[in-house]
Length: 214
Image (cartoon, rainbow, N blue to C red; front, side, top):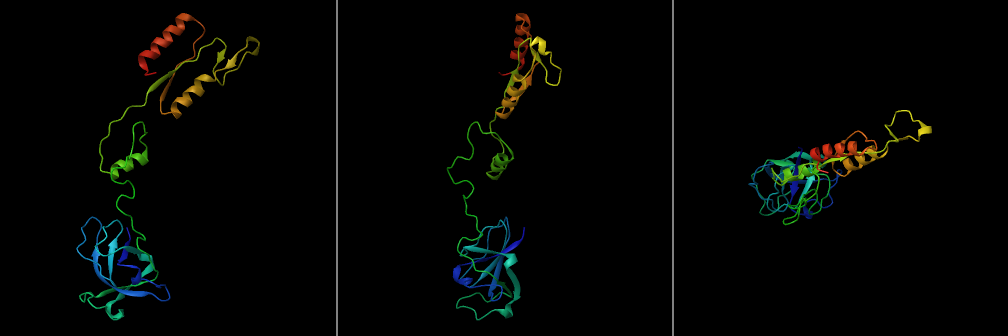
């Protein structure tokens, strides 16, 4: 993660550009995962890591690519009340407005807002969201096992040659229904097509009913 510079208000960087940068004292550093131990006053900057908590007094961030490290000797006259114990400075080469390059708490999911609801499939995005919320377990249901059986003496498996004189056709429903089941979130279990024989149909349906949810 790249370091960035953080400022108190718009006046600190107003009119700043690469040709005419604003030079500010760097009065501290804030690392990601650590509580800030420095506050920012007007006319000051703090070095901050991406993902770190903003210190008190700061309301905008400038990416490090739009800054240049300077010595404290490059600073203009210090404003009244400014900290004197810094030997670091930064040249800011762009203006920022309050809230720029800042992610507010609750920007992903606000307090009290439903993150996920019943029936939602857990893909990589949902699992990432749960991890971000600190949730390590959720109740889930397995994908339903759906048996797919086509019936008819005239059916022939796709890829096999048809006997048109006998009125044979390729089996469409088995594969179309199986694809629809998978698209809807189920797990299709495809059985061989069954001829128009009552006993054979009964055996196939009994087998599928014992093994599948639907």
